[in-house]
Amino acid sequence: MLSLLLLLVAGGKVSPSSQATVLLDSRVVNGQDAAPYSWPWQISLQYERDGTFRHTCGGTLIAPDWVMTAAHCISSSLTYEVVLGEYDMGAREGSEQRIPVAPADIFVHPKWRSSCVACGNDIALLKLQRLAVLNTQVQVGQLPPAGTVLPDGYPCYLSGWGRLATGGPLPERLQQALLPVVSYERCTQPDWWGTLAIRRTMICAGGAEKAGCNGDSGGPLNCQAADGHWEVHGIASFVSGLGCNAPKKPTVFTRVSAFEDWIAEVGNGMLGCLGCWDAQGAGEMGCHDARVLEHQGTGIPGCQGAGVPGQQGACVS
Image (cartoon, rainbow, N blue to C red):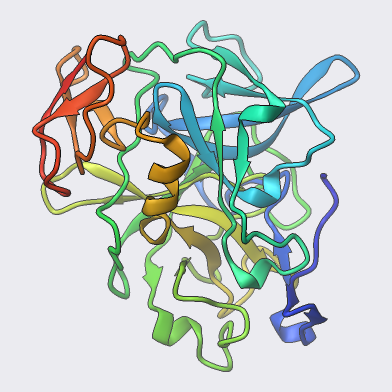
């Protein structure tokens, strides 16, 4: 699980200049300590070994009992739990919520192929065995409207506990790095990633100075919308095998807005509004991209005013 995987394209090995490495066991390169709990939907996906759970990937809480991460983070031979409210892995802060994930509740995209990272579909959903307790340290991340494509240069932030440099140490505190979006047209130029490695269902972001690295996999690419709220547009997927911050090889993410139909299908209506969050940090809930009203009377947040994607409504329970 923690070994580095080489990017294969259509079952064949790509040229060294296009070689890529899946972001397993990683950290943000040339990032900075994030403010504590400033990305409250960020989770740590951990696997059990010798009776201890260890960080392997990031992820996003997208409903009180659902997490979104990268497919390449998942191995059928491992036991997982999700840690919410984590900031400093070297300290017990009292905000952590550790929730198990049953093997039957892990859903990897059916078109994901571990032998072909460049084929895309690097996305998985995990249903938690109990509901997260939402508070100022743990909130649900919003997803963008389906089909959204951000323009070249749009400022986004990667967050995670990945390596600080290629082959470097792992951090204890959550890191963040500003990674501007690199358009599909620019990212697929021959001296960049090229068309064999990049699909329109992906997002390129960052550059030679700042990037994701091993351990950031599965974590969110956070982008601020025009009205000021934050949306999770990407799932950290892979970087160049030449190094986490190789020139003209930006970090590559799964584009969340290309998979919202699949997310809704897996959730079977139980993902509510695909993003309920505590907008004011004081228990006043809002929601975005409302679609279903499945949760009334269940105690699980849903939305009223549903049916108009992209509009806000009020969460109900």
